[in-house]
Image (cartoon, rainbow, N blue to C red):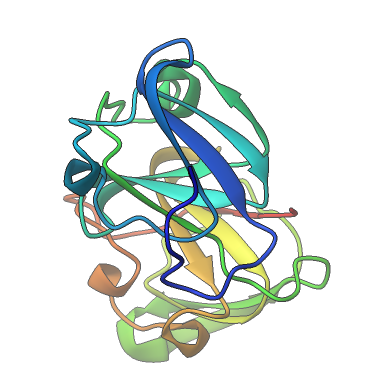
Length: 189
């Protein structure tokens, strides 16, 4: 059952279940879902990403820990959060990664908030950076991690959100005690 789109329908498709192992009630989405609670789910327990890249959120309204969900099967919660610093069994909202161009990803990173301090331009993955405080996404979508080696909290930065500008930690959704990013990876779907 596909729900009414709240964004223009694109190439995104995901099916979610209220039980692990693709059991129980299910819904098929082609657009964002700000709250599975509104559908009678307590949480999403398993899902299949059929096309496009998605971001799953711990809390409703696209809040809390973020999980990148690329094409594939996620039969239980540890399939999407098993190796993060903050694994959680909750997934209560999600949205497609809205990005027109994944092939030519470009990002400018700044040492401090508000685009201050030293800066650098990236077009490839970097597993280890000094702590960065603000970002401008020119094209593409990026997964930024709190610590080197793609560890810690994850944050998705997109050129089509916030006009690509992430001046402060709350704009990229940080709820961590350390408001920094030390590794970045392009989303390529």
